[in-house]
Length: 294
Image 1 (tube, rainbow, N blue to C red):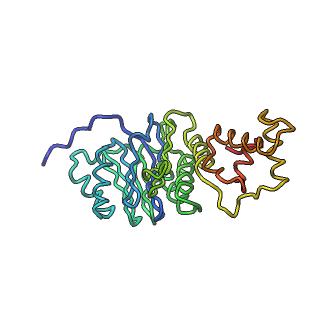
Image 2: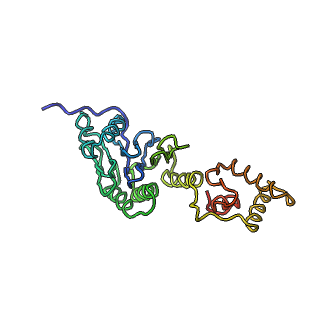
Image 3: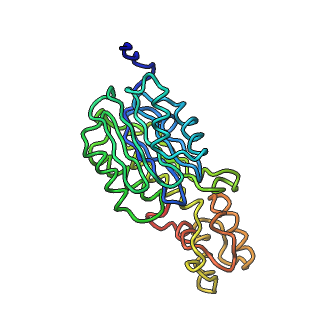
């Protein structure tokens, strides 16, 4: 019998994560008592799949796993291939979801307790050095129950895992990666959401805040929700700009919209403000400085 593999170098990434797809997006949500967990665990490619490597993480799993997924291998076969070639496999934990939303998870026998995972429609959830199995159960059940887009469901799962106890050593970092074809900045790549909280006492809550800002800056309201610019709305915009010291009371209409455009640019809200005939309600709320916006 061959001697057992030595413990691989590197700190254990005590982590709870979920990899998932809804058929449109693919992504990973993860949290840990580990600095900058988002720099180690998640990987995803639109139309291909997603991978989470943790415990004593093997970061080559990310590149190799996505390559296997691109070649059409199902999630279970990808895990078998990755761990089959790794003599330190019993120290690894891995979650994979493939292009068709099939999930698979692996937990090596040398991962520190509590460690384990489960799969369901469109996802694989896993964790190690956890308070107990309730953390993974919470990840899975919250994901299955949540409505909305994939980012919303992944965040709901991560928050549920955190509330169930999460990493038994404490909290430090969290990350969310969601990919969609041509949904990155300017359409140049698929990285739609790539947000990380590297060191924070409440990383999951802080990640939720950042995702709220992402939605403010990069999502636009559907056309049906836009507010037509009429006399009353123009007056509201004028009052809000005046309250911010950006417009005099007797300014002409063109000066009002010039001031509005300047404010939009400074606030990075161009994605939501491209039409002077209609205004996105989130932009108006931000301008009027309403509570809970951004």
